[in-house]
Image (tube, rainbow, N blue to C red; front, side, top):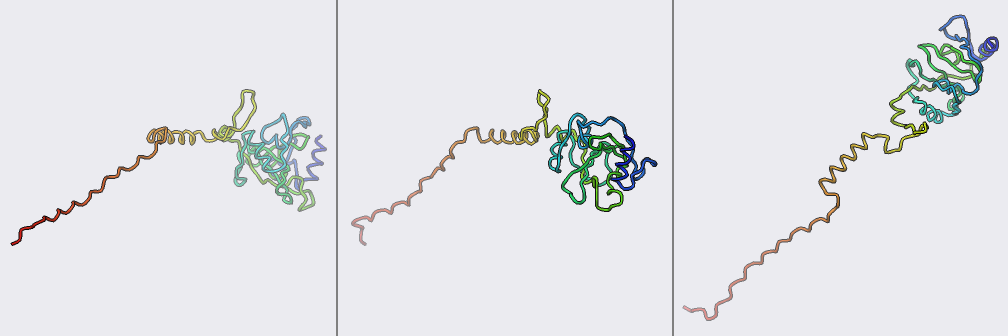
Length: 221
C-alpha cells in the first residue's frame, strides 16, 4: 500500500516528498484500511459513518452547517480543526477535495476510498508533476470552522434525534420577545379592542343680538 501511495503522490503532486516532515511537499500514510463508507468531505468535519456528496459550494454550506461547520474567510492562519476545501483553477465552482487542519502547516486528508494521509497544507495544492495547469485537486478556496452557537440558533434536534432547522419564529427569540413586549405595551395603552374615534363636540355659534325695533311715534321736538 505504501508503494501505491508513493506512486500516486509523486505522479499527481509536484514536489511530493516523505523525507522532510513539515516541509513543503511532505506527506506520510496515516494508516487505516480502505473505507468507502465516508469520503474526504465527511472526514474533514469529523464524520466517519457516511459520505457527504456535495458538488457545489451551496450544497457544501448546507451539509456542513448540519455538522456545526460554517464558512469563514479563507485568508490568514487557519485554526486546528478547520475544514479547507479545494477547487481547481479551471473549475472554480466545482469543489473537489477537503482536508482537516491539524497544525499551523499540516493537515490530514482522506484520499477517495483509500487511506488517510498526513501532509503539509500545501502538498495537495500543487499541479501534477511536470505540468503547470493540470491539477489533481487544485487549491484551497474555502474554509469552514465549527460554531456550536450558530448551529444551536439555526437547528434543533427532535426527540428521535433528527436535526432540523428551527421554525422562522425561533430564529431570533430575543427579537421575537422584544416585539411581543412592544405590542403588549401598545395594546395596554390603546385597549385590546379598537374604539371608533369620538366625534368632536361642535359648539353652537352665537347669533348677533337683534337690533331694537324702531319706536313708533317718537317724540318730536
